[in-house]
Image (tube, rainbow, N blue to C red; front, side, top):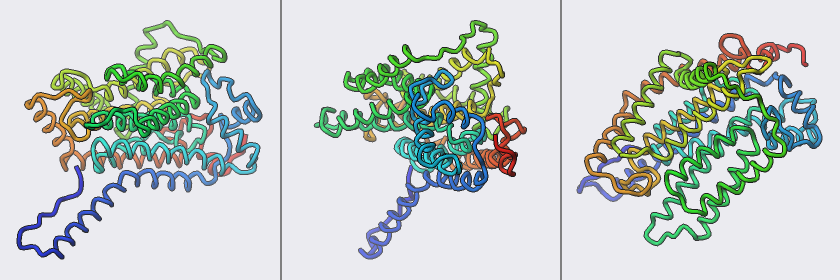
Length: 440
């Protein structure tokens, strides 16, 4: 995918040819900027709509429990050193006279997520589908809480870290596939360090960091990755495991599988529904289409793509672990809770992007090969290329754009009114606070 190409025949003057090339370059530059636009618009809209918000819900719990020290203590059973540390820093520097510094921190985390989604998806599916993917993640119809509540950076940052790790893994594989590439040069070492740092950030932010670690582990295992990549993954994971043994605040694990399994399945459906602008029948169809696509591409490739497997495993692990620990909460948390739908929806979108990229050997320096570097049969290659052409057809892109626009409208309503249905997942009505309601 890319900008339109302009033909230049033998009678074209040098000046005209130069003009064509300049036009093509300009189109290409604008196309590469397009995937970043949804994030910019979202942040501006969220900043304006939430300009009168004040501290609410877990804000007070965080400030009370982490106003000085205690950063390694678990919050709701998870290590939240990064967001709690940011809140603590702001508490001691900006105080609590204004909510703006805290909201800016939350919006900045969304910028980080949007950048990582755009950068990775462009490298796999080109700017058009990348723009749709960024919109699907950032303007997810269930994202009101994640966008408006700063502390929910503990959801956005681990997903951003996963995307950053994927990007660096792709760079390492590209260097390995180069004729003279050994993967041991200084640039490769920098990528390995970056992987370790992003993994550390994810694990120190929330329980979603565990999903990041799990997704990366699945990919490394299926790719039979070099030991140095396992070390970059394993060092921060080991540190987290040591913390977990010494500081964990274990939640009650449910053994009622009759309740756990339906809860997890409803979480997965909520994620697909969130991408489908909140319409459950369409969410079911999107989930079925994704499953069918994964099965079809896996059969044609004769193996599942490691990146697709990692993204899907993250969604399944999140739904399963959440279901196991949310059956006996004092205040019941429904499986279609907004934060859950937003998170699962993001993983499903990333899996879909990885699936589309797998049909063209994305990340392998443009070579028509499987993700593990093995050559594909010509018939299978042609079939996968045809699949990629179909999903990027103007009709499909138009339908997806309309669907995402509907989701964006629903998200905007959610940001203004708390969320559709009037049940605020953070426990306090955003609309009540926006209108100047009493502060807790």
